[in-house]
Amino acid sequence: MSKEWPLWEVFIRGQHGMSHRHFGSLHAPDAEMAIKNARDVYTRRNEGVSIWVVKAADIAASAPSDKGPLFEPSNTKVYRHPTFFDIPDDVGAM
Amino acid sequence: MYAQMVKTASNGVKDTKEMSAEERAFQEKIDRNEKIEPRDWMPEDYRRTLIRQIGQHAHSEIVGQLPEGNWITRAPTLERKAILLAKVQDEAGHGLYLYSAAETLGVSRDELLEMLHAGKMKYSSIFNYPTLTWADIGAVGWLVDGAAIMNQVPLQRTSYGPYSRAMIRICKEESFHQRQGYAIMMKMAEGTEDQKKMAQDAFNRFWYPSLMMFGPSDGASVHSEQSMAWRIKINSNDELRQKFVDQTVPQAEYLGLTVPDENLKWNEEKGGYDFSDPDWNEFFQVLKGNGPCNHERLGARVKAWEDGAWVRDGMMAHADKKAARKVAAE
Image (tube, rainbow over all chains, first blue to last red):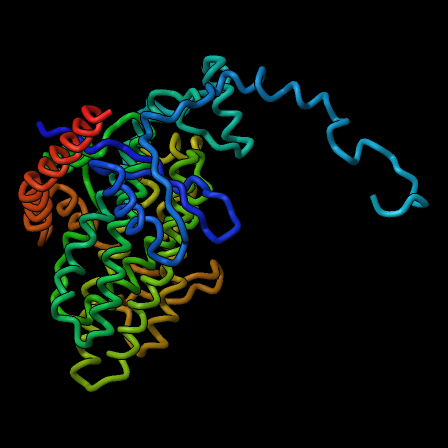
């Protein structure tokens, strides 16, 4: 059987000034074709001004089971949010 | 509905007490309306059922290009041709979004295509009917895409994250499809006597096959319960079919077309129309492969796949060669 085209993840900048956002994935033989295909598959209605593609196999991801150790510690650090501090109205906008 | 009679891989809905700890946590997550993501734990049956459902949905989008593609070269104006091209291209896009969603469940797109080509996976029964006249293109957009929207809008809230996201993108684009179909029907219905006749004829032929798209009636739909508990099916077949009829009848009246059902009657008590069932025997025959265009449709898909093999292989070989050259240069 023929070799299947590798999978690419597609990131698109929707407008100038915004960051690239994950849009989906597609198959293509190489990066150049992946960008061309991404243009046809994901930007048929002016959804983007720039495209990034990266081989899906090259993405490293955190495991769902690591959710607790990774993200829970910040729950107890409420002082990182500005609303933790009461500033009197008399001080004015801060 | 683009996925019909998806067999749920399950032996019935389990009671909370019968579930393992993992299964219970999984079900509770769904009940809280949280999404399941590709790397999360999921029951094997959930994964297998979803591959079947999303795969069948993807195949429908791709095979669905064939009856409409039939009219691209014969569209009555350049504008209609451009619109139909854009619509058919959207269907290709929808198929690709869905194949990507299915692939997150551990099956490859080529594997799914091979199963379709070998007759081991299905696509919607509706695409096994021919598009004989230009009015059929109007009827397909209005009725077939209309029925698909009915099914796909609730699926935006389905429990599986990648499927839900694909549905959201598809629904955004689908409304164009239905409106362009209805616009064709309006033009035909306002036209000459012959054009009006064509519109009515297309409506007559597509009405019952469109009702079949929602699948058999609830009593005969054996796989629903588990799929509903998993939120990969949101509404029952009959519920969606009723909604579709109630929405479509006034649209037909506006066009001055007659619904081909002498039993169609407003039922004040239930606040909806009473209507005749489609011929379920015909439906099962079409699913079995005995519809008017089953051979032609599958044949066209297999031919496209086989004829394109040398292009796919050539491009892959070129990409490998370029990559090897780059490594050698470094």
